[in-house]
Image 1 (cartoon, one colour):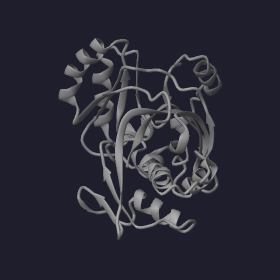
Image 2 (tube, rainbow, N blue to C red):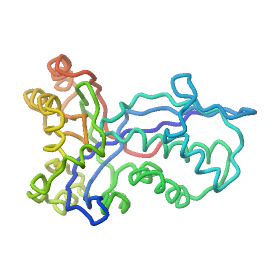
Image 3 (spheres, rainbow, N blue to C red):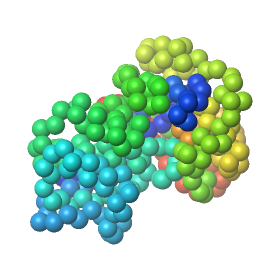
Image 4 (cartoon, rainbow, N blue to C red):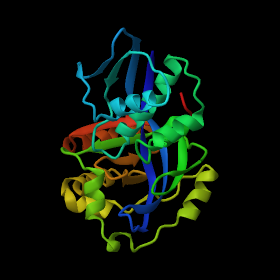
Length: 276
């Protein structure tokens, strides 16, 4: 059995402030996109957890998800192969999506009969945004990322993703963040209201400034992408992927020819309109 683990884009990300526990409260609107990893499940008489044809390290979120599930239900031995397409350290949520797909996939493959709420609760122990990937194509995310309110998915068909060499860790991005970076408040209520009407408002990300300081190559790439005159252009999450939205497939194709020489990785994608 194969199951897809989709990437996500943050179309809106506002930092509200730092908490006493060191985490930050935020408001974000994100949606899954067509770019995805694949997890392959097969019956086996002993566990085989593979990534790039090698044993998966125990700290991998897929391995952690499987181990976690076994603490709650009986899961037989399984051969599980992770085929990556989503880049690591890119702000696309690849690891979290892989973990969620592992929980959902094992439940389906072995007919465990777990409720979605149970899967979401297990997912929350693996990471704040893992529950989002269980069964939510688009959502308003609040608090430290644990409060998830489903939203209607938007149809955005022409998205170009690009990244420079290297990667950015979420921890590094938040460590670089200062109060000055989020002094300018966003307009979350207006953005959400437009979204609920099927309209994409002005995209926003408080993490751009600190991440650009960590890696100026990302800011340079965004400037190149802006030169192609997209409808909107923004870094997603904690980076380092920047996305640009175009009005047509031809506009995207022409922009890609300009952007590709300035990037280490480029992909065309679109929003996911429902859970597959």
